[in-house]
Amino acid sequence: MDLVSEIASYLSSLGLSASVIRSVLIAIFIFVFFLVLAWVSGKYVRARVSVRFSREAALILGRIVSALIILAGLALALHSLGFDISGLLLAGGFLAIAIGFASQTVVSNLLSGVFLYIDRPFSIGDPVMIGNNMGIVEDITIFSTRLRTFKGELLRISNNEVFTSTIINMMATKARRIEYQFLLSHNSDVSKAISIVKDALEKHPFILTEPEPRVFIAQSNPDGIVMTVWAWSPSKLFFPVWMELFSTIREELIKAGIRLAIPQRIIIRGPESADILGSEKGALKTPEKPGEPS
Amino acid sequence: MTYGMLSEGELVVSGYRVRVKGLEGGFRLYTRLPLNEDKILANVMIREGTDLTLVPVEPSTGNLQGVVECIYVKLETPIVVGNGAKVEIRITVPVDYAIAAIGSGGDASLIDAFSDTERPSKLILYGTPTGGYICRFHKVSLEDLSKPGLAEASLKINNYSGRVAIVSKVVIPLSLVNIYYKPGTWQANAGVIIMNLETEKVAEIIAEETPPTADFEKSPEIVKEKYLIPVQRLSYLTFKVEGFKMLWGY
Image 1: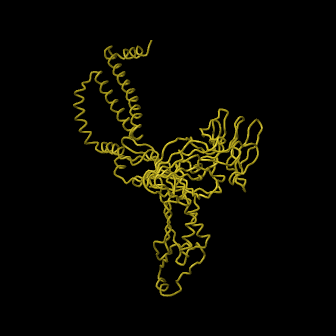
Image 2: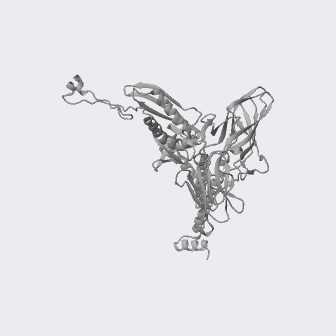
Image 3: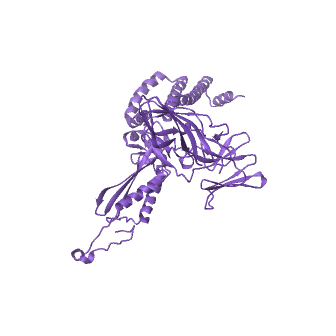
């Protein structure tokens, strides 16, 4: 006995008539057929679209096509069971309006998703910052964008939020600038410090020769002299270089006897404060060792 | 140090000790160590029937793999090329070292690669951060002779720009670079690079795929590992001959 006959005999045992059984089987067949068609069409659309457009655009278009075919299959399956589709469509129209009002956010997310595909501010695999969220783009779906944070969590952000947020794509450019500030004590040899930093940057294999690194003094404040360092690195190597270079420069400065200042705050409390402020007893002695608070 | 087949023993290659040792059961052990330390940097067991070869490869191995897109050759002394003139000069380009395992079918698998320690690599951005290229920086003096770790190349400059041009740099994409070596020597060659000056700022770069002499061999194409444990993965090296436009000046 084949499978169809088995199903038919099972449904007969439930007391269903032969015509009902036939309609149910036809409906199942139609729905399954459309499911397969949706799967095949989705794959085909993805393959065709990805040739000319981004992988993400291909993915979403494929999913939309699949969803539409599944809906059509469902409608036809219902029709084969004797449901009046015209009535359903009319009801569907009203329902759509009702749902439209009720699901503005969903529609907004959907449209934002489409606009994101057109705008293409990032691709799957890019490290990005969306609003305050940082991570690697794992997936872009019709309604949401998924980020894998650097802590390993999976973050789902609605496309509406993505579209309206400030997006920083850290891999969109070939090179990125590393920026540091070092606070030198007021009596430091600034020219020597600049020369040491420039030398360290020159020796580093992943700091670009052009754009040329910049080391300069832009300001001086009560705590010390602020030395700014700007150096460019390939975007793909940015994080390891950024993490390592600060320590390298700091060590080179300390080794050369350059004093790094540490901001000092004198907190005076209690009834003795007036006496301390009024006398020289309260003055703090400045340690003179390189690299220690001054 | 010489390019070509590695036999059992120890060889000094650019600040490293490269060692091949025979083991029981037809295996050989490849090891790379720093010159003055015993810290093992690469350690791979090789099966019988596989030859080990030291070859020069494009300078984008290790951390630079997938980062470096081209070689930026800076001429220490710029060259003035008159309108319609053709000039040919010798330049050098940096190369990295690769240890390739050559199978019986002639396919090559990379088992180790490293940069020249005597010539620390520096990178440069050619163009803008959004549309430019990350290149390996190499300064060339016309008096420089080729050394181990460098490949000699012939640069032919054709000036079609309609005016006198001053050339101070050549940007050669890695996809155009063909590296040849002379087995039994340290000599490497990058063939002929043609630079057609099109306008005041734009030049076209083309590479000719011809070895300098018949006794030079082309560095093998590295294919994915079939049976060897990779120390550093290197993608397929292809030798496409395509034009490249220097859009940000020469």
